[in-house]
Image (cartoon, rainbow, N blue to C red):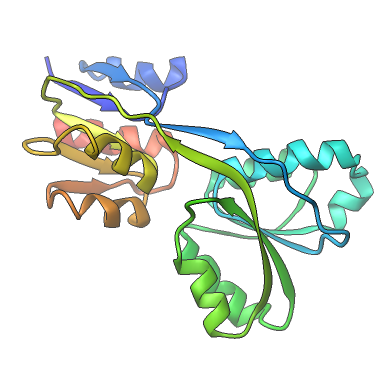
Length: 223
């Protein structure tokens, strides 16, 4: 039986998509997220989130500030990924743009909102693509370190037929104690794939930035 390793704990329904295809699955959290204490700006106009983790850290802080529903509706959000978007909509924020990756989001902002000011909620080890693009094009923005990403290193003394990766940090965590030799790396998006390429050329990218899409790509590749 072929075995899949997920570098993120899956929900029962997600796990069943793998088991139902006839594969066994091993799962663990390759990274741990820790919200940080930070000051919210007085004026919240245009907010950027490149992950669900940033939204969760922001929500935790804004709940303390008791942001009213009508105030939330006036805040304009720009994000990466459909799960990030869903969490913002669930909490009554207005969505302006949901992109597949940070580079695409940066291009949209440059084309449509270059003269506006943004607040970017990110990790202490965030990627450089988006802030560099905004800085190079003189877009006004403030960066707030909202959470910390810690690598949860774990060594596996076995081979897997496929490994599911959901972030560059997850790739870094896994490869710090393991090899990607003789296995297929399945990536949630291009940014994660860019990190995987440092270790192997044997990889594939999901059609959408969701866990379910990563699993579907894996099943198709292994059958």
